[in-house]
Image (cartoon, rainbow, N blue to C red):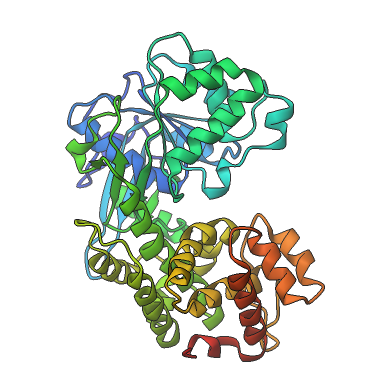
Amino acid sequence: MTVERLSEATLDRVDAVPVPTYARDATPTIVHLGVGAFARAHLAVYADDLLQAGHPTLIRGVSLRSPGAEEQLAPQDGLFSVDEREPGQDHLLRVVGSLASVGTGVEAAVEAITAPTTALITLTVTEKGYELDPGDRAEPDRPRSAPAVIARGLGLRRGQGPPPVIASLDNVMDNGVLLRQRVIDAAEQADVGLARWIMEHVRFPSSVVDRMVPATTPSDLDAVARRLGLRDEATVVAEHHRSWFITDVDGLPPLADVGVRVVGDIVPYQRRKLWLLNGPHSALAYGGLLAGCETIADAAAHPDVSSFVRRLVDDILEVSDRTPGVEPDAFAEESLRRFRNPELGHTCRQVGADGSRKLAQRLLPVVAARAILDLPTNRFAVVAAVWLAAVTRLPLRGVLLPDVDDPDAAALRAAAEDRDRRALSHVAFGRQATDAFADEVAGTVEQLVYHGIDVLREEP
């Protein structure tokens, strides 16, 4: 039996599930680049809340490369559902209508950015998405990367009223500062005057966003279809928790009305999340791979992995920011609780992907802070060593860890062929880590080869 798709035409059939009650035919004011599951479960939900409160915050979504989001959402008129899951509680399902349209490709993105009604541009393009493509410099009129696309759009928008606010929603320290610099770098390739105008007039607030959003499975789609009575190919699954901190700048929508924290100094909150949530999340992922765990919740329940990560968190707390209101200890305990949520099914492989970009943000600043105080960094070396073993397909006690995706996988595997662990470690971290820590990681890789999961049990 064929079940009809969720859409504007079928929305009135949805019963006992919250649905949009606002008009969806207004002009979008937000452009979002990277319409993945996280953006749908986070930004789009906040925008949905604002729309329900009467604020004009419809989103025009664009994926720069993959047409997957458009293929899922266009037949549904941008409608999709969010399935919130917590242990021991009924699933909370809602239909979100804040995505007015979804497109694909650079031209669609530039067109959306140049629309005079666009007041806010947001991005979830992952840590690696902020790197300029070599083609951006060679052919500035044919942008490839997200920063170059934004620069191109701003160039066409210049002189046509106030420029939009541009906010990164990715897990990158000082993400607004980084995005601003990358956009300026891209603009300089085409027009020095444009770069100067961006520096003077465009605001790039930094953000801290937080919600765990695992990949949606076929069984998730089936379960939601039974609840809705309609097929939703764009369903996202998430925990109940969501939060958003953003630097206070002129031109933002009234985000505080829907629970967003608009702050003057965002750095303590960025550091807290990267150190005490994202870092331990990666540690659980790699420890879980080492222990043969499928999901993060499985890893959090494994005695060796959970004990190791608990000690790692204690190491991080020793050097954490104690700014009033930040409360790192309570945040750490809540993070550990969230990791144990078995309803999410967040896989270790998914969380462990792109370690070459993530660990530089999540672990190395803590390593540097501990090194200044002459505190041991061995547990951080273990996390990095397991990541290297997974990416380079290094046998541990004759067993290969599950493969994890990484943009530097080819270079790291080439370096691993010489079996020089020190050289491999230095290739992995380059100038991002001290020689001392890179050497410590190299030694830990060697221990892994012979001792496997026992390295999680060893104390300094």
